[in-house]
Image (tube, rainbow, N blue to C red; front, top):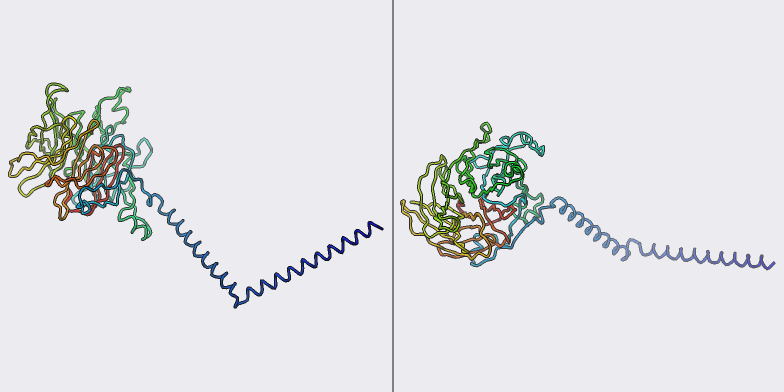
Length: 452
């Protein structure tokens, strides 16, 4: 009897609890129906929250799409500092908000550089099929489309010349284009693999680089310096061979062909350093001759040479050290030559005016004290900026220097933490440069008449 009584009591308690639960559910249902009436303020607030959440979700989706579609463009790899301004006029020459953008990091130690705009009817890029069939990396170079943008010939300390095609990839969305400017991203395409037109002791056009430079693991002293494009001749100074090598290539519309010859052979005690084009058939180069062994005196000179090897003029540079860099700027009745020379621990930039075939005394416009051994090359290019006059972009031991030479003023400097050795103008506002193992580009203002 006691057990039956307890069971009956438990059953009544469960029934009562179920009734309380059903009553609570009915009250909650009535409260929700009241709150969700068409004229309910709660329903309007819920709709507003839903609309805001939808907008936020759409913005997050668009942001993710932009980040995915433009990856590699929003945050390009940049090195060094922004422009350090020493003169307010620097803003007329430089986009001081820009840093130096790395295009390619495949160099051992970058030296001279020459650029060809493939859309320029006066010039022609190196045809891709001259580089032969598939290379050792099985890259199909025969069927590679020709470069339609800018082609760079970059000298390296080991590989003589790397022929690279620089293609610009513009952002797909207008907002990104406004933020990043006219060239947000570059694609650098070696033709092929960055090891074309290699020279060395074996005098072969396309040898295996390692076997050529280091036969039987005994590395020969190889060094390459200045590069200049003169007409259809690509010139390369080779201090280790005491010569200037000319690569002559046919235009793209002609049958592809590359020939190589010695454009200038230096005497036994003479070293050729840097090159700069003058016109379609001449170039200027800096040379040094050392007498009395490594501790002897140095005789520096500027030499104007034709691409066929004929020496035209020699301008001695008295009281100069080793002339590691040269730049050229035409004048109505002559020319101006810029020279960077190193004597002891002093790096000096000077210019020499030649008017009516008469050379004025050189004038130094800037000097820098060196804490480390100097670079092997310090090329210079020039341009004309409105309100300033001629401006010199000069490679330096720790970065890029921008001068107003007539006034002897340093306008600005880019500190890259490594020497800048090669410089070349591309399209307006594009300055290509080599800095250590990096091939870089710097955005400048669109200034007139880039030369060098």
